[in-house]
Amino acid sequence: MGKQLHEGRKSPTGPLWWIVIAPLVTVPATQAWTAGIAQSDACTVSHDFLGGAALCPTETLAVALAPGLINLVPALWLPFGQAVRKTAVVATALGLARFLVPLAALLTSGPNASVSWGFFPAYPNEPSILVASIGLWLISVLALVLFAREGGRSSRPSIKARLAGLARQWQSMWE
Image (tube, rainbow, N blue to C red; front, side, top):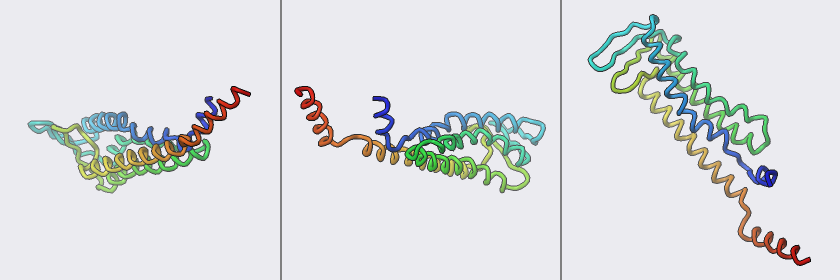
């Protein structure tokens, strides 16, 4: 039975699920690391009425994006079967984009980057990059839905095939 279930899944979505739920870990970890770096001696901090701002060396602040490496875990699925490899390639490409887009934006912002906090927690990039990251996450969700639909259609036998299987079982019981 387990073998049938394994073989019946034409498009396993595990790698895509990984990158869809990864922000539950990466976002809070990135915010915590950013806040820690912004309060360190490496940055110049100014406090406002509600929050503050810090001017930090870009390379130092780039370390705060390290939790985004979790988005590359789907690459570990690449050595598996062809069906898993297909989703792993897509998930790895999306995960790579979700790691590299914020990193590239930060590293190209100049020698220093500004981090502010107050109403929103500290984050190491401009709001536009946050919007781009959300867009990439939505593309990941869309990929998951599309692969799940594809896998659902190909792994479920049609009604006709089910009825034929039941008829064979019924016939074999009486032989």
